[in-house]
Image 1 (cartoon, helix red, strand yellow):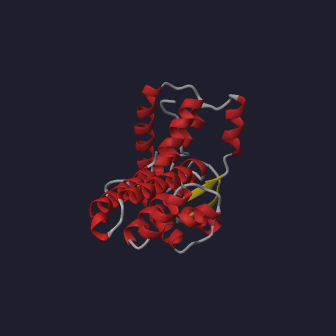
Image 2: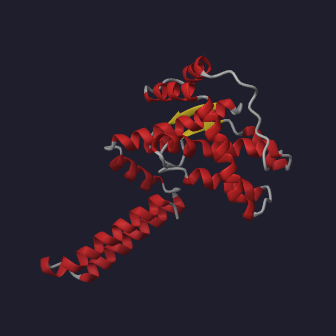
Image 3: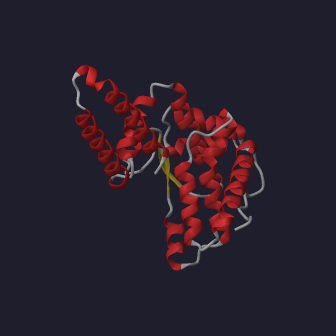
Length: 237
C-alpha cells in the first residue's frame, strides 16, 4: 500500500474514531459510524487496486496544491527525471506536473515524465536487456529523489520510482539483497549528474514551471549544459 493510500486510510480512521466518541452526544449511533468507515475503506481499496490509486492522488493533489512547496517539490522532482533522461539518451515524450495532468495522460502518481520505453520493453521481452541499460534506467528513476534531496534536503516523493527499480530488478533475476545497493548506487550517479549540470537543471526548472514544450526544454538543456564526456551507465549491474 502506497503512502497516499495509507494517509487517506489513517485520516479516515482518525476522523471516524473521533466521531464515534462524540457521536452519542449529537445522536449519531456507533453502528452508523462503523458502516460509514467500512464504506470509506472499501472505496479506498477499490481506488488503490482498481484504479492504481488515481482517485486518492487526485484528492491529495487537490488539497496539497494549496502549498507552494508541494508544487515546487513536484516541479523539481520531475525536472530531475527530465534532465537525466536526456543526458542518458532516453527520449522524453511529454511531462505532467499534477495528478490531474497525470490522470489525463493515463499515468499513475502526482506527476511524471513520459518516456519512450519501447527499446527497454523489447529487450525485456526477448531477454536481451544489457547491464548498462538496466543501470541507465535505475539512474533515471532515482533522479527525481536526487533532485528533491539536493533542493530541499530530503525527498517527499519517489516511492513509485523505487517500485519501478525493484520490479525491473526482479524481472532480470537479480537478488533482493542487491536491490538496496543498486538503489544507493543509482542515487549517487543521479546526484553526480545533477551537480555537474546544475545550470542546465535550474534553467529546465524555470522552463517547466512555465509549461514550456518538450522541444523547448531540450533546447534549454543544450544551451546550458556543461560539455563533458559521454555519460556512461556502467556500474554494479
